[in-house]
Length: 394
Image (cartoon, rainbow, N blue to C red; front, side, top):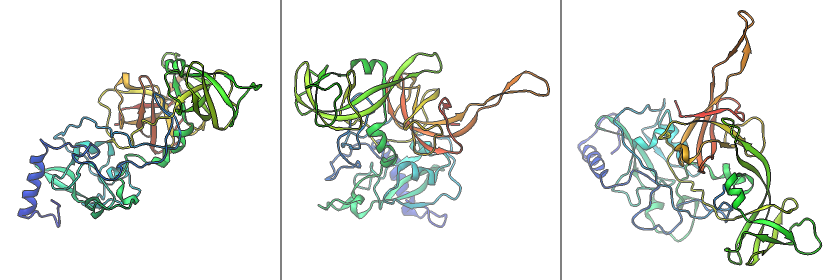
């Protein structure tokens, strides 16, 4: 199926036609579920992490169901990257974003040119050692897996990094966020269990202490929680509404006795837990395997917070945006960041003039709530700041 020396022999033509014909019965998503389960988990794993309905927290992950976006093939040309390869061998540590950028000028067009190869076992996942090739079908560029690695085909008992499929974004880039990068929507914060009192003669609690909690009556003994202090309000710059709160990670604990109030034993703390702190069940629901793509709806929002509290935002930092599912955002959506133009005084004709917004980088959405979302800065051509605009990629 692969172009070599700019000629196609008869076998290649037949194979390419087979790939095209198979599209009606095959998913175009390399991360969708296979018919037969693999003996090893396809998602890079660590340990449990907080997040329930929140975007919390710990540096542990579980093998969640891969996100499966709706993909549509289009007939318009997709611009290829300058110096793109005709063939690429997937390496350990690659991400789908990295590979997309090798072939395409704009990585978010990947869903429009990816074709699965029906002749390869488990064609929907991409593994180190797989060979991806650029082919042309009906004159349009397509990328397909032309040869699977021996690790994919061999059911070996030992577990190595080569047995894990690639992620869309680097896990290491958001691992710190998973533990400490907490933003709570207003309604969500009000509904979370909270610290009622400490056991014994303590005004504050730390690791080794027990606390009494209200709002966790339905959780069984053994449930792990992250404890979060409600910090500064997050204000939507569009209408000055309070849309959430900065969450300050306090520690974590285990539910020892269910009930109302329940008893939680604090196992680890970074600072003292105090009355009113909220508890978030430690469950991770952040899939790392999905397509980068342009949003299906018009998006014009702002960066309202950055995890870590820095003033200048660069590559692989996590930002919070004031747009979410209600605005049409979904996992994998790519947005361009625009540094808002300053208002300057016209020294010649007088008055004030607002300078044009300048493109400053690219953000990919990896966690979505109703009114806010988290994004990872994939590219930064200049420093990005809070209140910079996020819009559909140009």
